Image (cartoon, rainbow, N blue to C red):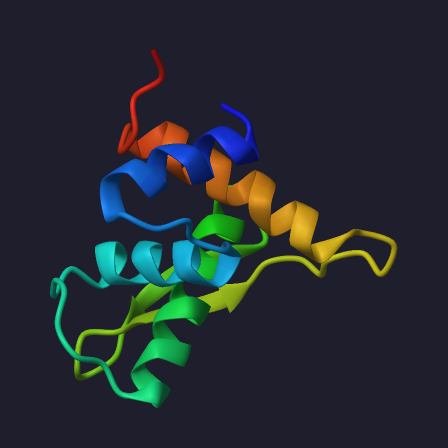
Length: 108
């Protein structure tokens, strides 16, 4: 699956074309497991960070090491992202891997 295909598939499901931040928010909600509800700005930022850590964990950059007292995952950095690495591209590749491994959107 390519990035544009993922965005198109998500557009069909959610009714609008999500950007990278919107897709990360959806992953964060999925991973936290508390469902769709109103989130504060701080919670939204934490959900996006959760999604980035989860996605990059699939490429060995982070490892989940536990949960805090209110149920949010705690992440430990395993390796640095090289300065020459395009971070958006790396995150998009990791997001594609996330959706592929979770079988959230099935390829035809």
